Amino acid sequence: MNRHGPGSVVTSVLQTRKYHAMTKRQLIEDIRQHNPTAQPQFLAQFEDADLQQYLDHLEAAKAKHARKIGWLRPQSRLRAAS
Image (tube, rainbow, N blue to C red):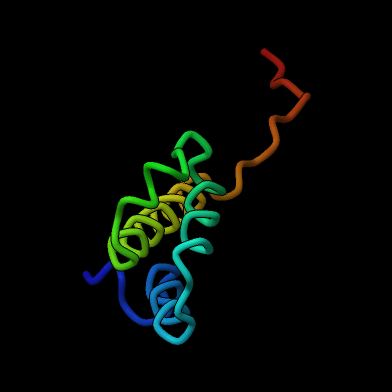
């Protein structure tokens, strides 16, 4: 099974990025939205392609986590009689 096939969130993110090149500053800002502990000075040392790859990884991990959480049925206040 191809987890990153057509229609997947990861595929959508990667396709969007392909058509919208981001500046290094934009990449760093987006990375810091997902990982606020990442220091801009540290991230600035990397090439744009490396930053893009890391951002894609962060977004895919977030999307994967969101799919796992899904919808949970609220706990009922009613209890079965014994």
